[in-house]
Amino acid sequence: MGKLALYTTAAVCAAAAACAVAVVVVRRRKELAGRRARALGVIEELEGIFATPIERLRLIADEMVEEMQRGLTSDLSGSSLKMILSYVDKLPTGDEKGLFYALDLGGTNFRVLRVQLGGREARLVKQEYEEVSIPPHIMVGGSIELFDFIASALANFVATEGEDFHLPEGRQRELGFTFSFPVKQTSISSGNLIKWTKGFSIEDTVGKDVVAELTKAMERQGLDMRVTALVNDTIGTLAGGRYGDQDVVAAVILGTGTNAAYVEHANAIPKWDGLLPSSGKMVINMEWGNFRSKDLPITDYDRSLDFESLNPGEQIYEKMISGMYLGEIVRRVLLRIAQEASIFGEVVPPRLEVPFILRTPHMSAMHHDTSPDLKIVAAKLKDVLGIANIPLQTRKMVVGVCDIVAKRGARLAAAGIYGILKKLGRDTVQTEKQKTVIAMDGGLYEHYSIFSECLVDTLRELLGEEASSSVVIKLANDGSGIGAALLAASHSQYLGFDES
Image 1 (cartoon, one colour):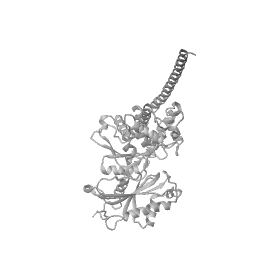
Image 2: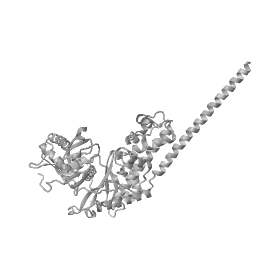
Image 3: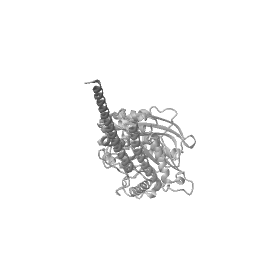
Image 4: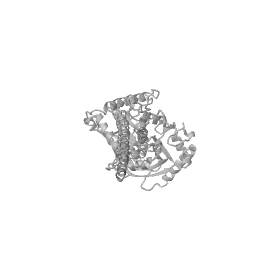
């Protein structure tokens, strides 16, 4: 074979190889384009089913008002809102004086706190607190063991009371008890446990008065202290907010979970069968996480999350707006995109199939990533989900999913707040300039700024510019503990006695 023939054969082979590479490249591009198209199709569908147009939010708010009214009428009305009577009829005024304690039990840690109140002039003179971890075996042991552990820690804390704190001679120390578990409240200072949550499982406490259990434990410790107020964290937040601002009418917690409480006119509570309180007011614990509405944009992602949860069929609203669940919704969306469009590779990343592995703080960090190459998104995908080397376009898609899920949650939360304002008649322009303040607590609202900004903007949109100018959402950071101490003060057995 001559040189010319060799050159020709080589050229033909090279051309064939180049042609084959070109075919592979074209096929690969088509495949990637197809994947991208399928992924964008899921995103487009997501935008539609997660949509919260203002008309829908108004309908949801109207149904919130209806459920509130039904829940206030009777416990047997079938309302999705329990509208629990808190028996708190006196909120702090700022005139409170004296030494008061608080115990805030809401999870695996509890906080003990004391405050010295100096009345209108001195206000909060001094406060001290201590946080105590509950050993796992205590959380699943017996009622006596749990309350003895708490009372022992409380007695140790009281023993460190310094000279800056002053209890008038002959008086008993008083305690506000924040107990963030479901209870059937029977008075301002009593309530029977309905069920434990958050990892506690102590059967012999269920059905018992938790204040009586704590009181007996304090007596066993030789601690002379009286529980004067039993509240949940939302009502504590409301009390703490009211102490700082007398225009506070409601409190909302948007953290791992969510709830709301507000001040109702006592004569607007048909199910109240006792004498009306002298203040004419009553704080209502809505337990709004369980709110249901035919207009809530419940999707297949929400249904599957609910079905696989520890409490299927319950807390539907909470599962759409709170920090416990937003990251999980994002994970479920990304899993579907990975399954249908292979955006993270041919094989679905194993970690992406693990429920609750993607937490809302991870979602927030990705959503707030402003770097040009979205390096935080890349880092979170790698560290949390084990997904590396993701193209920038895919990272942008992940941020887009976070945006859709977060803003739906924020807008639905705003609709709930708007419902409370409508129930109170504070959704319109007031004839006399009346300020309306919502005390807000919870890490979701405090730390996820895109979420909180969207909530505030949506509430303004619902109210209109003029009416919204008199409505303020004020962050009441960690208000439930001090709120309990303030409620102990405003419901003190010594009210009316001279403080000197």
